[in-house]
Structures are given as structure tokens and as C-alpha cells.
Image (cartoon, rainbow, N blue to C red; front, side, top):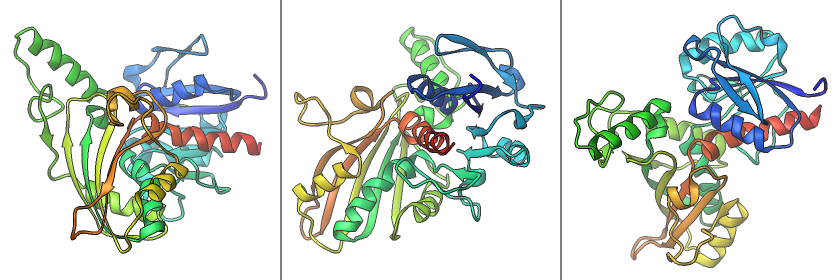
Length: 323
């Protein structure tokens, strides 16, 4: 393993950290991992390529031991420890909001050219999943405005959200009461409008760093009782009328997938298509009703695996190839 690329996964026991670990496990990359988390997770054991790896405490870790670090932690944790990694000469990928809009830090998704930079950022899952589709439509027809309805899974708030949905589902099915903790009210068998968060503002800022042109985007978000998988309904007003067949080909060329199954009229869902899978799935492509000009479509993708971890894997692959 002397020639292995040494990587620290900061937040290895969180949703993004676990997804990245799984993708590295599936890859053929020669890597040596340091798994870091809070002291509460210290000495947990995680399997990687059939071997147990012990989780270490982030506090006190010497980043000079590794060549790259992936930060999949909240902003305040990244703010405290990320500068230490850079100072130690370590390349850094940051999934938190700490780096996303920082001056001079490239914002990257899978498929982007990776610049020769020691510090890069990955956008939020919503921007990462939206950007390729928006760019393809904009190039063909010029988007004037976009409306996005987001059906957001509980994993969007991390491992605690997954645990709460699982726990509430079991309790309610056994006719027992629940006490919401992560969400303000019951999430199992329910939908929760997300109001008061800065989703739209953050999304616009991130899209500006990913798209070749900008346009207004209105976002409505609803938290739904799904573990993994973002479902997005897009209504895009365009300057030019778009032929659907040509647009479908352009979207597929941009990396979007059609559902493989034929029995359900091409509908894509988080459970049957996206959860635990790579790729963004396209369904429901149609023209806006007259007199509106534009298109409607649905996108479905795993918010953790495709919306986050996949991008770090692609950046790490690029860095390893350069070495």
C-alpha cells in the first residue's frame, strides 16, 4: 500500500461520508483511508474492502499523514478544521457551505474539468442535480425563468433524519405515540412544507458558479417520508420553442438517464430508480401548455450518493491520475 493515495474522510460516519466510503470500496482506486469523526464515534469499526477500519477522533488528527481530505461535516466543523488540513499541505474537498461561495475556491461537480487547486468545493445536492439539466435546456432554448418543486428526503438533514423517520414509522405501525425531535412535527406518513430556510438564495448562488448563464429560479420544498432520493419537478420558460426529441437527446448527452423499466410508462421514483444508485433520472418531459413556451420535466436522483459523494469520487480520481 506504499503507492496508495492517502485520503482522510472527515465525517466518515455521516451520510455523505458513508456513501463516499461505499463508492471508494466499489472502485479500483489504490487508496489508504483515515476515517475521522467526532469523539462520539471514535473507535467505531467500518468495513472497507473486507477489512475493518477504526474511526479516529477528528480533534488532534495530523493531516500531514494524508494527501487529500474530504470534509463531509457541518459548516462550523469545516471552519475549525479545514484550515489545518490546508496548512498541512493536504488537498481538500469541502461539501459544507463553508467553502461553496468562498472567493477563489472552484465549485465542481462530476464531469467538470478539475483545476490544479488544493482547495475545491462541492455544491449542495439540489444544485448538483439540477445544473446539468438546466445547462442543456438553456443552451438549446435559452431559459428565461425556472420553477422547481423539491420533494426532499429525510436524509437531506443527515443521519438523524433517517433515524427519526425509521423510528416513527415503527412506533406508529405498532400503535405507539411519538415525540418528534429532528423535525418539528411527525414526518412518518406526512409531508412538511419547508419554510424559512435559505434554499432558493443558496441555490441561485451555487448555480451561478456552475452554469454559463443565469436566470431567476423559484424554489418550493417539501420534506417527504422517503429515506433517500430527491424528486424535482421543473417548469422552464424558454425564449425559443424546443423540439422534445432533440431536447431529450441533449439531456441524455448531458448524462441524464431514462428509467430502464417499461411497465410504468417511464416514471422514475426514488425507491425504484435512484436510491443507492448513480445517475440522474429523467421522466415526464413535455411542453408547457399554451400560451406558455417552455418545457416541464421530472428529475430523480439519490441526494447523498449522486448529489454529493459521486462528485468527490470524480475529483479524487482526477487527483490520483495526475500523480
